[in-house]
Image (cartoon, rainbow, N blue to C red; front, top):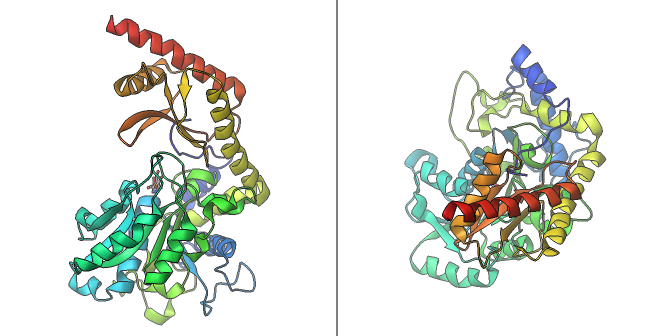
Length: 404
Ligand SMILES: Cc1ncc(COP(=O)(O)O)c(C=O)c1O
């Protein structure tokens, strides 16, 4: 219940074993044909879910007109940086040679994942290039402020390189209104980047798709398979609506690997930070090959339902406070907020962890400390919720004793 780490299938370690045994890294087809092909296949599958795939079938690796594109990479942080590099290439094509123009900024919710700001610093733009958009009491972006802030940014002589959305936010598991943000981006011709590291999976479920309404209007999306697709760490997709956007992200030449027009359809090396990368496509494919897409969708729906069940249970307990109904499988709450102050919520978490009984996390929402659960295990049930709340109550008592 702690972090956003997948509980994988029993046999999910096999692709890592294959990779570790034959060691065929997959960024070039000639190095790892199986991994590279499965990467191309799974990227096509994801593009298809977004309506960005124009091929005949998922084994169609041609660079078709108006097709989307994508690559797999080692984790969401690198993925965010990759997408932002592409956004920069779109607005400032010379940045690769000349460095970042000083007038570029990125707008996004003040609660954007820290990897966004890190990426901007690494890209030489500095953290100050991030323009935080205010969020509401549950830390969802307030879209009504976008126009005013954009006008102010332009008045200062800056150019907006991208607008970033949380889908969903790491702390709260709540989704920004993607459709509204997409409309704003279209109006002002801005790059729209959706950080769907955790929540892009909502797209797969008829029940939850509404939460990512408008996601297909993004220019780029990142999607962690090692969070909600049951893939062992690490495996993230960076997806682009227009394939040209991906081609422009890295202009580096390496005569021993890039032979310009000879690049095979599923070579990902020209488009990723990594040179050598493990056979990520095999891992992702494996997750689906084990049980099929329907089972993954069931897993996602079950995880989301668990957070709802935990919410319902805690709401029925007068000692717990939940600030919002969950939209994903992440839920934040406080124990006796009128008695147990912020510091004590944190102390409670450490008591729980040190007891070995439960492993949950904690986060700040508008400066207030919350306990945070991420319902990743399909076997968690009502007995676990009861045991968790009992354990919290038990350790809260010991905090009082410590004070005395
Ligand atoms: C919204 C969001 N973006 C990006 C990341 C970073 O992903 P990774 O841990 O795969 O680097 C996370 C991780 O929790 C996240 O929640």
